[in-house]
Image (cartoon, rainbow, N blue to C red; front, side, top):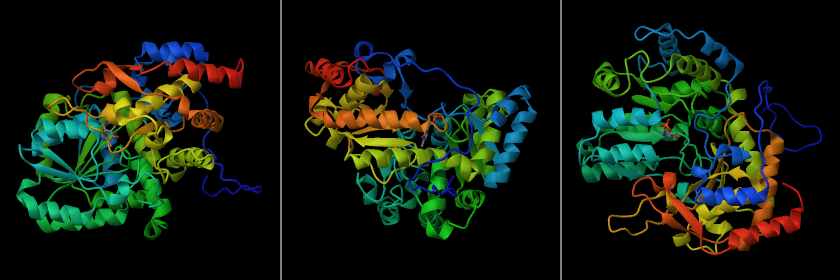
Length: 482
Ligand SMILES: *Cc1c(COP(=O)(O)O)cnc(C)c1O
């Protein structure tokens, strides 16, 4: 779609696929949405799918599969050991990443469990551009300490810097000289950094990190869950890579890594995960843990059907016309919102569009969870489900004090190839309306607060009757419209 120009102008993302299976959606009236969000304790994780119109919670396990993936699933070879289906995936990994060994795992966090158990000792430091929730949890569980060394630009909400996911190489050297290389378990680079808005790193940055790793004998571990988007950004934003194919860029990244692990709920548009390894000793060390926690080495907790789907999905990831759909839809959505001054994270990244709640509802103090309140308000006025990525997603400290997040974001994920442009336009319309009426949005407060992972199960309530007033304003402006 990147090659198609429109005669009458405009930047319209053009899909290079057609839709052949559809699922009916419900858009329930605002009165029901008001009820539903309160039944869910203002926590979008607790909403029921039957009350949701556009599900923009996550891209995990909900990307559209291709006809070829579905066809491959039908011929999966189901056997406990020695499955031909597994051999296909193993060969595809060798072909794409050039890595000799592959270990299957049931999803991304399972890979993190295995790698952390094998390499993280109490007191170890694990430098990374930025953490992901499950990554940090597994490292901490094994007594390790996460050190985030994203470049300063990475935490600047509005920027036109193309690679906000880059690691600060000087800070990496600083950590090594402060703690000594023997205290560093490994260096972790997360491609398409999830929690700071799906922002990419450059290939050049990865080459610089590799140099430091070589100098100090450190292992470089790549979390490639969001690789597809990052590949697209390297191809389109990194001058030196513009003539490289997606396959060549992938191979260049793999050649710089010792271990690549991924969640196949994202990469390859299927479900599952795995660890790609270059070195035999590392493979032998991780292998035992796979059989202990995941399953035998030729399935690792996955169904063989999913393994078939991953193999085809990885191959399709090497096609620019397949992987550009997500980032281009996100860029379109961000552009439309910016035209009306809606505060979003820029430049647009992968994964989704991120509303900056700190600005959107700057009258709500962080103690009343601006991003959570915005998630609740947007659901009420649109039936669109987003995910709070702010203070509710953090944990209280050991004294029970709130730990305020660096950013208060409402993430509107764009599952790949799932929504149409008119659905994106609908979401944009309702967000713009909400922005004009933002002063009607109020805070929320916990009524049930679990100690662990409170963002999954916690229940909150509005601090005033602002939700009823917001719904009344919606009715006044939209009449009988859903
Ligand atoms: C989703 C994700 C994970 C965890 O993968 P799961 O399959 O959900 O367990 C790890 N790292 C990144 C960057 C992710 O986006």
